[in-house]
Length: 190
Image (cartoon, rainbow, N blue to C red):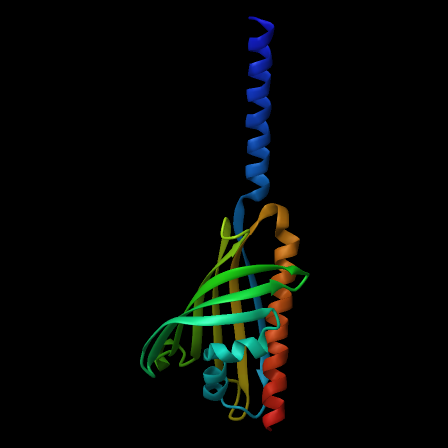
């Protein structure tokens, strides 16, 4: 084997190994985050109506910069809408991303718990849309007792292995801010 052939073989081997390592570090897996809170002296239906209105999400989530409703249909029993929004990262505020979220807003039948639900799926894109991640959320509101509302949000989010801690901090920041701002809003009304 000639020197040029051996050199070419080494180059190919290095490129394949480097590509495999890079793929492993950037490949995405799903993680779960769950948070809950109690909103005192407020009915679940009132909290549900507030959370379901995306224009209020700009007040609840400090990372959202702008949004545009791109689809809206349904009725009071089951309302669906889609929204395109721009947000900044809380721990890297100079970076902006765009996302499309699809929301399903409904009250579950009593046989399924009778909870008020805002379910959503999101596709969040970075680097001018070249790198996108998916997430799925479920925000449930139910009676804790006759006066208070129990809110629970569960988020399943996709994140590359290399950025796992960064993604977790971002999800924690946003979800904690939303719950704190939701509590603050309803405390003002009481």
